[in-house]
Length: 153
Image (cartoon, rainbow, N blue to C red; front, side, top):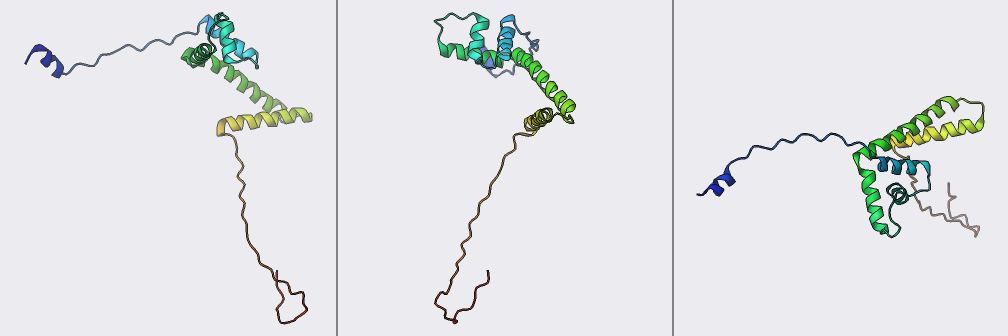
């Protein structure tokens, strides 16, 4: 047995690694998210191009991939969660303030907001429609013969 064989069968102690500190969101990542949140018609690829000053001849598929990767980074997800919390708090305040309003439109907004919150927490309600078919056979005597008993329906 040589030294390499001995090393191969000798148990190695597990390497310990320090946990990496969470990365902070970069200026460009923040700009991308802010652009997405400020314009509801903007796609993630368009927001990426704006924030990262992408060259006009860059491949659309490469931009899509990088935009998607950026939005999955923990620091970006955390920053997006701040927007989500703001939206949820605004909706809850609207429900609380307008739920008993004299104004019909405000009550309607409060109800729609409450339904949104419910659907987000519990999942969207689904409607199940069950159909069944029964066959009923009816015989009617139109000849006037009284040999047949009347039918009860």
